[in-house]
Length: 136
Image (cartoon, rainbow, N blue to C red; front, side, top):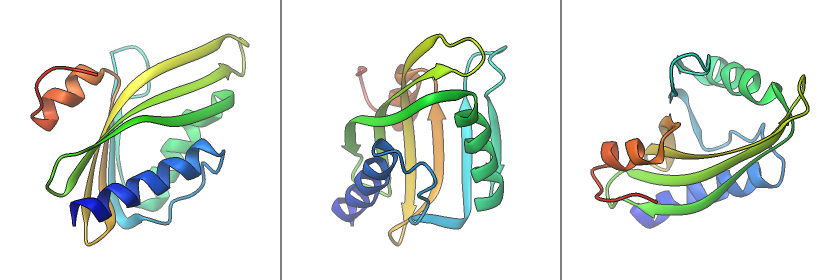
């Protein structure tokens, strides 16, 4: 099952990388979504269900133009979890300043559906939560 989980996640990130940020096919209707970021960034929070998750993702992405999400590396954790080391790039809509950030996303699947996504602003924290040594 872990190989199938990796393929589900890879397909999601390929859609996102191609600009199809609305693609949510593999997300379970009750998906849980959390984002852990430094205080003061205003991007941390928890959401549940496709409607809340879509709104939170849309709000985050909406702050940028030319926004892209790309998976640098996908790591099979050999259970129902997959760790993705991703890169978010874009340009601030208000400031015009380019931005690039490397994140870690711990994704939990059940029966081929994504049931939980935990975004970590710090890849080292994602590695620690995943139970892995080292970092990206």
